[in-house]
Amino acid sequence: MIANLAMTLMGLWLAYHAIFATAAGDVGAFETLFAGAAVTLLAAWARRTDLMTWPSATNMVLGLVILALTGVARTIGIDALASFWVLLLSGIAVAIVALWSILYRPDEAALRRQSVAASDQIAG
Image (cartoon, rainbow, N blue to C red; front, side, top):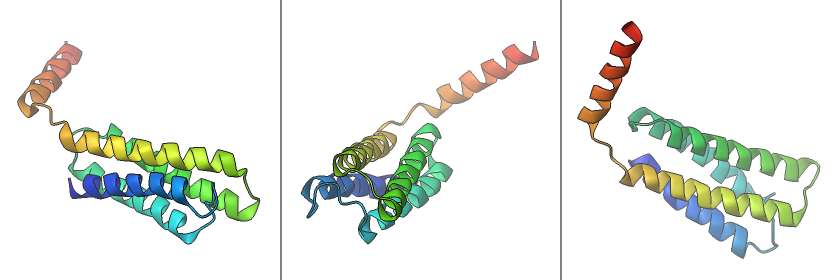
Protein backbone atom coordinates (compact mmCIF):
# COMPACT_ATOMS: atom_id res chain seq x y z
CA MET A 1 0.00 0.00 0.00
CA ILE A 2 2.86 2.39 0.76
CA ALA A 3 4.46 1.59 -2.59
CA ASN A 4 1.20 2.26 -4.40
CA LEU A 5 0.76 5.57 -2.58
CA ALA A 6 4.31 6.58 -3.54
CA MET A 7 3.63 5.53 -7.14
CA THR A 8 0.46 7.63 -7.19
CA LEU A 9 2.44 10.66 -6.10
CA MET A 10 5.21 9.85 -8.58
CA GLY A 11 2.67 9.57 -11.41
CA LEU A 12 1.17 12.93 -10.49
CA TRP A 13 4.67 14.42 -10.40
CA LEU A 14 5.42 12.97 -13.85
CA ALA A 15 2.26 14.55 -15.27
CA TYR A 16 3.15 17.85 -13.59
CA HIS A 17 6.71 17.62 -14.93
CA ALA A 18 5.47 16.94 -18.46
CA ILE A 19 3.14 19.94 -18.43
CA PHE A 20 5.23 22.48 -16.53
CA ALA A 21 8.76 21.49 -17.63
CA THR A 22 11.00 24.36 -18.68
CA ALA A 23 10.82 23.16 -22.28
CA ALA A 24 7.84 21.13 -23.47
CA GLY A 25 8.83 17.49 -23.77
CA ASP A 26 12.16 17.88 -21.97
CA VAL A 27 12.74 14.29 -20.87
CA GLY A 28 16.50 14.29 -20.97
CA ALA A 29 16.66 15.47 -17.36
CA PHE A 30 18.01 13.42 -14.49
CA GLU A 31 14.67 13.76 -12.68
CA THR A 32 12.85 11.83 -15.41
CA LEU A 33 15.43 9.05 -15.28
CA PHE A 34 15.05 8.88 -11.51
CA ALA A 35 11.24 8.85 -11.79
CA GLY A 36 11.26 5.96 -14.27
CA ALA A 37 13.56 3.93 -12.04
CA ALA A 38 11.48 4.78 -8.96
CA VAL A 39 8.23 3.71 -10.63
CA THR A 40 9.80 0.42 -11.73
CA LEU A 41 11.22 -0.36 -8.29
CA LEU A 42 8.06 0.70 -6.45
CA ALA A 43 5.98 -1.51 -8.75
CA ALA A 44 8.24 -4.46 -7.96
CA TRP A 45 7.78 -3.74 -4.25
CA ALA A 46 3.99 -3.40 -4.62
CA ARG A 47 3.81 -6.72 -6.48
CA ARG A 48 4.76 -8.57 -3.30
CA THR A 49 1.85 -7.21 -1.27
CA ASP A 50 -0.99 -6.79 -3.78
CA LEU A 51 -3.69 -9.43 -4.18
CA MET A 52 -3.73 -8.95 -7.95
CA THR A 53 -0.52 -8.63 -9.92
CA TRP A 54 -1.71 -6.83 -13.03
CA PRO A 55 -1.56 -3.28 -11.57
CA SER A 56 2.06 -3.65 -10.53
CA ALA A 57 2.95 -5.31 -13.83
CA THR A 58 1.33 -2.42 -15.69
CA ASN A 59 3.28 0.11 -13.65
CA MET A 60 6.53 -1.83 -14.17
CA VAL A 61 6.02 -1.63 -17.93
CA LEU A 62 5.20 2.09 -17.71
CA GLY A 63 8.33 2.68 -15.62
CA LEU A 64 10.40 0.89 -18.25
CA VAL A 65 8.75 2.99 -20.97
CA ILE A 66 9.77 6.15 -19.11
CA LEU A 67 13.33 4.84 -18.75
CA ALA A 68 13.47 3.95 -22.45
CA LEU A 69 12.08 7.36 -23.41
CA THR A 70 14.74 9.07 -21.33
CA GLY A 71 17.48 6.91 -22.82
CA VAL A 72 16.37 7.54 -26.39
CA ALA A 73 16.01 11.27 -25.74
CA ARG A 74 19.53 11.49 -24.34
CA THR A 75 21.21 9.40 -27.05
CA ILE A 76 19.56 10.16 -30.39
CA GLY A 77 16.92 12.71 -29.53
CA ILE A 78 13.18 12.55 -29.85
CA ASP A 79 10.44 14.93 -30.93
CA ALA A 80 9.40 17.18 -28.06
CA LEU A 81 5.69 16.73 -28.71
CA ALA A 82 5.94 12.93 -28.76
CA SER A 83 7.96 12.84 -25.56
CA PHE A 84 5.51 15.25 -23.92
CA TRP A 85 2.56 12.97 -24.65
CA VAL A 86 4.35 9.76 -23.67
CA LEU A 87 5.49 11.28 -20.39
CA LEU A 88 2.10 12.85 -19.61
CA LEU A 89 0.06 9.75 -20.40
CA SER A 90 2.50 7.44 -18.63
CA GLY A 91 2.35 9.60 -15.51
CA ILE A 92 -1.44 9.71 -15.54
CA ALA A 93 -1.67 5.95 -16.09
CA VAL A 94 0.80 5.21 -13.27
CA ALA A 95 -1.20 7.37 -10.87
CA ILE A 96 -4.57 5.88 -11.85
CA VAL A 97 -3.45 2.25 -11.73
CA ALA A 98 -1.64 2.68 -8.41
CA LEU A 99 -4.60 4.49 -6.88
CA TRP A 100 -6.96 1.81 -8.17
CA SER A 101 -4.75 -0.82 -6.56
CA ILE A 102 -4.98 1.03 -3.24
CA LEU A 103 -8.75 1.48 -3.31
CA TYR A 104 -9.92 -1.83 -4.77
CA ARG A 105 -9.98 -4.63 -2.23
CA PRO A 106 -11.78 -7.77 -3.42
CA ASP A 107 -13.29 -10.21 -0.95
CA GLU A 108 -10.45 -12.65 -0.19
CA ALA A 109 -12.83 -15.48 0.71
CA ALA A 110 -14.57 -15.13 -2.65
CA LEU A 111 -11.21 -15.21 -4.43
CA ARG A 112 -10.26 -18.40 -2.58
CA ARG A 113 -13.61 -20.05 -3.40
CA GLN A 114 -13.18 -19.08 -7.03
CA SER A 115 -9.66 -20.52 -7.06
CA VAL A 116 -10.81 -23.79 -5.45
CA ALA A 117 -13.71 -24.09 -7.90
CA ALA A 118 -11.37 -23.57 -10.83
CA SER A 119 -8.93 -26.19 -9.55
CA ASP A 120 -11.78 -28.67 -8.95
CA GLN A 121 -13.02 -28.08 -12.47
CA ILE A 122 -9.55 -28.74 -13.88
CA ALA A 123 -9.14 -31.89 -11.76
CA GLY A 124 -12.22 -33.31 -13.23
